[in-house]
Image 1: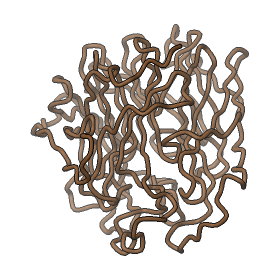
Image 2: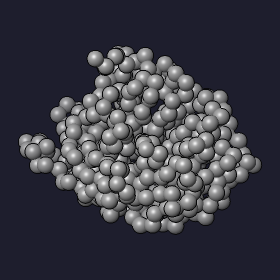
Image 3: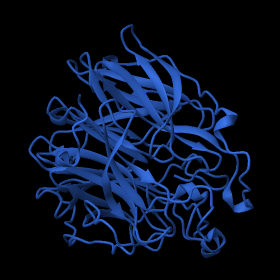
Image 4: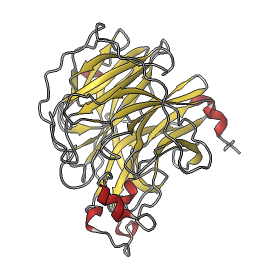
Length: 430
């Protein structure tokens, strides 16, 4: 996403192309060979620097970038990736066709090779499995309605969308939680610019048909609290290219900590000048339809960019993927030179090179497990992760700018595997 004034992905997208749902006859794309980005800085090797490419932007003469991908492990062991691709530009690039589509990619060999098995006419897609059945939250147009589709053939064909909630809502693939027989996922509401947007949690009864809107309910809303002025530094001089005084929360993750439901959101504070701050909300689901309530700001790594939290029962730990910036208040790097190259969307805290892995017992206090992947320049990135567990390994995707116009406008969705990931954690239990 783009989080400064000007052309934005928050702008409501047009109707897009009339894309047909692909079937099993979709041509097979030649398998990608494993790729890697050289580590120019030395030091410890990243945990999963080698990767394969699950999806790429089309090479059709128009400008496209990969949006926020989702991933899930299928019951039979295959990996499914939903890769939204937008035909709009955050940088004024020409030949924009304004299309929206989702490429459905599938791997039968643990992510070594990929087949594109469907192309769907949606701007956002979040796949998940419940009760052995494949579902996907979709939106035909960002910030407009929340719909659900399902597939009985591992993602090759999909049902027509069923609208669960009509109105102004949005999220990308963030964590869900199952508690007390219901699947919970969070959405932003009210404001397509993100500023002062509200927060709700939708809950589906997993004992019923999730494709029936009656199986779902929506919580009462929590309002954006506004950032306390004391969090923002008073003595940092910002050049004009840094960006405005943005105050946003977005991309909520739902977690259950010993039965207590929390929603954790990333923040954009002071044009990314204040990095590593998240918002914590409580979700009380004990009385229908539930209530979301702002709790506190909490300092946690990766809080300034999209993070993904995964609960792993065997280790009794939460695992989090996200990005760490290196120079969030422009005190070290030659940022004037960086901006002159025009391959970076400010502010400096919007550094998306380092995709990191952390673990925690309470989903608040995070211990470092290591760097998953590192991009080789500020105009490149591994970002917007989604993850699942495959045996002893953590498997994940990233929205990656390998040769994109900047670190935001990604040209690929990459797949990574962290082998024997539980061995990276110390014992945190007394």
